[in-house]
Length: 99
Image (cartoon, rainbow, N blue to C red; front, side):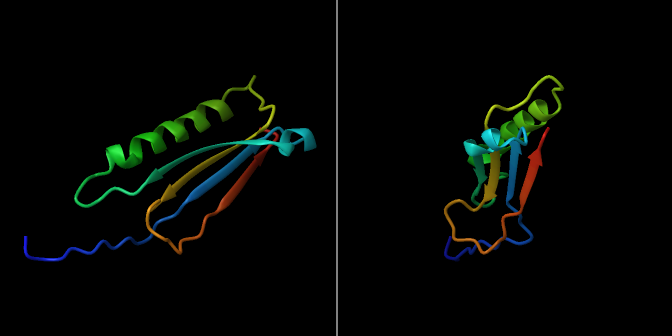
């Protein structure tokens, strides 16, 4: 190839959502479900690992949209960018209590 290629990532956000039933007991323990996306160029990233991000977000959607479902313990859904590279990007936290 004879040329160096440097990756540049811009305008990326990590997402963390905590779902609980709003009680102290429900918040005492949590299950972490996480996925990452850090594909290399020029790949679209389906296997590293956009597929698991999509599955995790769909599980979040289905659980929170099911009226009869209530978590016994908090569930933390976390999707993040650049797992293998130190990233200065902020991680916003969204708390969803009493779903």
